[in-house]
Length: 225
Image (cartoon, rainbow, N blue to C red; front, side):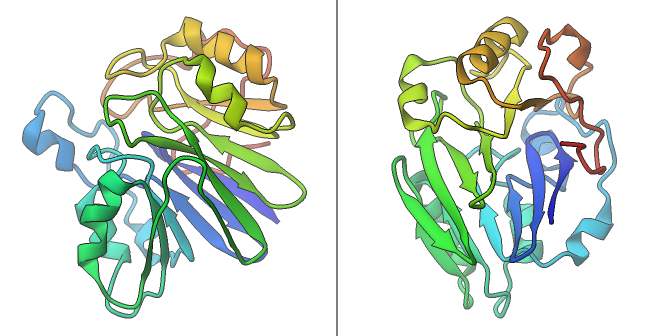
């Protein structure tokens, strides 16, 4: 089983036969406290807190990606979660303690668990420790870019058979715009390209993202890949 659900903003839920993985879940309204204009347009679906992820991946230390308010709902004294995060997040998230395994997951680092291999790849973002992640199940490879601009150095970190690519298209905050995102997809040539990091704080439409491999996600619903 390979099931992928969009959690809104840059959050993704991967459900595999052997494990459940969450990447950058943002299930609060924390950003509003420091940036009032960036309030949630879509309410939190509390049912996702009933899910126990085996692995949490945080790509960088910005509130809409590593959100302590969301993290504390999953990381408890006995939750036993593996947390993969670059140093900028790792230095903070490990304060949750418990029996969780906090792995300092910087670029070029690989971690294999429950038959899934995770590899941290370059991201070009305002957090210099930011990463993307390639999730290799053995039969399919999923690439979540995290927040990033188009940068030629990224491509040397990637395999050439990406099944699905998840990428920002919002064009602000040091992220690719729709034009650069289209070029990024063309360079990588995945089977599917899923635009994310839109709709939570803005009214950006994925219709402006021109890409013949595009699959437009719906928040809180499985993405048909």
